[in-house]
Each structure stands twice: as structure tokens, then as C-alpha cells.
Amino acid sequence: MLDDSAVVIPGEGHLYFDITGTATRPTDPFNPAGLEEVGHTSRESPLTIAQDGGERTTHGSWQNTSLRESISPVTQMFQFALLQWDDLAYQLYYGAGGVQDGDYYGVPKGTPQPTEGAMYIRVDDGPDFADFWLPRVSILRADNVELDPENLSGFPVQATVLGVSDLEYLFQVGAKRAAGGS
Image 1 (cartoon, rainbow, N blue to C red):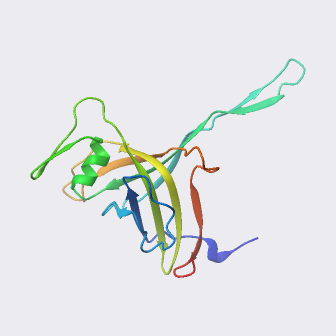
Image 2: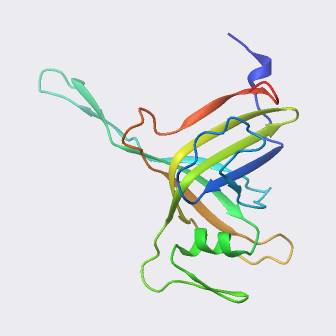
Image 3: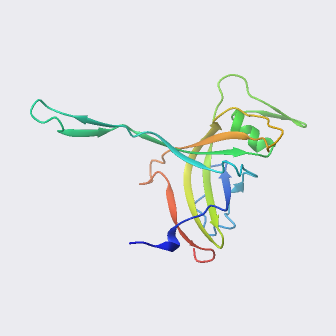
């Protein structure tokens, strides 16, 4: 069935994070209690939803060359660039365990440790929106920081979706709906 109102033009978006990981899916998408907005993110590459794995392999016998199929495990990832040069961006990009020293953030030594928490993403399409609820993610750098005098510079990060043992789903995707109609 064709539903012309179900398509989305992602005009604006808001990414929220709960570093404690205790937040629940917001009941008010425009004021998500327990979650803090991560700040400005890149408009040129606002959000990439990717997956790794999921390769399909066909297994056959001598009598049936297409007897069974297996699919490798899939990892889901949300990638975006943090534009604010602040403590939260530094922690999410460089790793947990850094030390604030006045105006400076001390990047932790050794292997970077991702920052875990809960994440909520709202994608606005005019007066309507669609959203994602990620009960548990692990965030760390996704790419190099590039300083370009013609553009805003930021910190590309990846939120890898992690499972929660007592939930039957990995994350949730909300249908496109009108603001106030959630």
C-alpha cells in the first residue's frame, strides 16, 4: 500500500544521550527526560545508520547445492559527527576516563574505552518526526578529525548498538507521526 505521508525528509535532528544508561524511552519526544542533547552535529553528514556482518552463505550437499542458508551475526551502528568542542564530545570521541583540567581535557592513556549509555534520536520532518530508541550503545571515534577552513570541524563518532539481556529487541524505530500525536 502506498502511503505518501509515511516518507521522511530529515530536515532537522536531535541526538540525546544518557551516560548513566538508566533512561527509558521518552514519553515526550521533544523533552526527553533523563537524556541530554549531545549538542550540534554535522548537517553535511547528519546521521548514517550502518550494519556490519549479515553475510549470507548457502550450504549445499552433493545432492542439493542450496540445502541451507546461514547468516553471520549483525552489528548495528549509528554514525554522526559532534561539532561542539566540549567535554562530552571529547569523552565520546577519545574514550571514557579522561580528566578535566581547567580548559583542557586530558585524553586517557592506552587503549580507548568506549562510553556506554542509552540514546534517543529524533528526526524532524517539518511538523512531523520519526525516532529511534537505543537502550544501550557504546560510543567511540569512527574516523579522523579533519580541520577544513571552509567547514565546521567536528569529531566523527560511532554508536554501536549493544543488546540488553532482558529486552526482546535490540533497538526500536518509531513510525513517522505528528508532533503532539505521540
